Image (cartoon, rainbow, N blue to C red; front, side, top):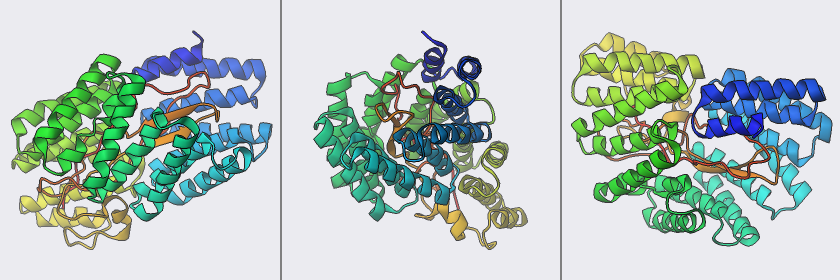
Length: 457
């Protein structure tokens, strides 16, 4: 097994510390053997960038992706499909950073290249349509997202057949879109069909099947008895397939803990949240945004029980991580500021509460958000704020190799208020890029709709 594939294997298993030196060494070997502007060097750059993105190190990843794109443009010309693949990678990074204007322009350019080079009905075009749909979906522009998902689904069904796993991905995207709009009757049969396709094509214990075990559909409707066995089965699949300390296991744990939390079963939820946090700190490092999400989840659990002294340092640590990793203007930072403001308000510390609200760009009245905050908090007030990670199919490095990435690792959450109904939104920190290699046709361990809990007003 060569260095790249071995690095990818470690990546898939969540062993990032072992993967990094292999990708760094592979890059150095290729630069020395082929020169700094060879397409294989661009491949290694993308692999290393994906590894950094998985660990929340966007600052390290971006220059690698920019350099990889420049190499491909020089080597193949600006309208080559491999250039479009790199455009997609960079677009997904900008989307994760809420740089939506940049992300949209790159995604649209990639789509135009694919359609011109390959024709309008090729699977690579469908992949890009799914990306664009996910982009609009993440911003709550559902009317724009729906026809793109539908077109992608039609292309996959025609090109690959109605039972191909890629069809399941588009079905999941549509299902989550409908779910977020409360259109459960439309969402449920799509989820069930996606699950059936994956079980038949991949086997009942494949990690992608865990993704399709969409207990969130039932959780959101308060049908907890239906949701729990689905979450438990997804967790069991991931523990068996990926190891008990894989970040995707932490996502399933967060889903299950969120279910207990929704029902006020705090004693059951707490150790599950704590296990998810421990996995993420070990696998991703103590300053990863997903760690901040787990901290916020646990803080909110204490907050809801009036244990403010336990909640406050967790909220503060989560805020510090978000500010450092995402920048002071990111919606997740506004969410964390609101959490702290609400905590202080509940304790009668109104001066602190107003200060945090103003820092979050509010007008000083708790519960009010500006348009900037609304990017992350836009659709509900006084409710749980769920950020779904829309299933996304991406073309990575080669149009012949389609990779699926469904949802980031955060697990259920990002809620606002104490109501027990999950609300909407999409993953503020989607980890949509991963190390890729043209020798791999599909990523193992696609993630579920893992949503986040944390925001309150």
